Amino acid sequence: MLKILVLLVLFVFGSVSSAFACTSFALYGNEIFYGMNFDFTFLPLKFWIESNSGMKIFHMAFLYEPYIKNPEFGDYFANTCGMNDKGLFCACHEIEPYIEGVEEPNGDQIHIGDQYDTIGMYSDVKTVEKFISKKQAVQYTGPSLHNLFADTKGNAIVSETDNTENIIVDRNNDFLVMANFANHSMIGKHPDEAVGVGADRYKIAHEYLAKNKNNFNVDKGFELLGKAYSRDPGCITYCSMIFHPRTNSIYIGLNLNYERVWKVSLDSGVIETHRGYEIYRQTHLGTEGMLSADLESFGN
Image (spheres, rainbow, N blue to C red):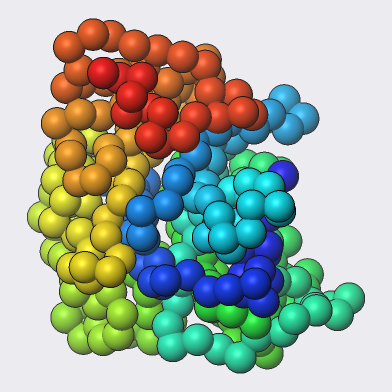
């Protein structure tokens, strides 16, 4: 499986022109929904489905910029959001301010980005927590990360680390939201007290989910992500995704255009035009996947 650790180790070759932001959520209302806005620069995205020991896992990955600057490396796509066919979801975000990272973890440590790989192994958050507890998570030498995990059993957590302690934040509401500041800083606080990078998006998502949790659907999911877009002109909302684990479906909108939406079925491995396209199109994803640019061209 592609690993997020390369995403940050490769800062020795150069740095991204703009940090990636992102907003994600897990909702337990009338139904279970997960969602993510991927906020970054215009870099190629890839949507693909992995098969691992009978389990299917959808991934959204982006082409890491040093590989563009150094084409002899070949393409490397870093997974940053996904869900398996058991309904286990993970979104990996940057967290600010950065924590001094560890270049080479020792035998008792693991880079926190590698926790993402658990969606290719497990079916629920409790098992992920057991995995996390076995080793001390540490940050990379580049940007720091945190992860939101959610499952269909009602469990949702944010996993963070200061390199000395594994910090787990459980949901204490019908939903859990993650932006780009430390979620553990919000324990015992009202959402309006949020400060830091993405605090505006965090508050917007909290307010919307509180008002709409009992009549939530895919359209409302995109409405929420449309409200919680990145206001930073150097870090735009490039891809929005709504995950519906009951049907193993993922809905994808690009560039805040939710009139044109794609649907991925994990069960069949098919991505198809869901709405906004004059001609119905479908194709299999598989391990080769499809680039976002090719997806847009294919739909026309």
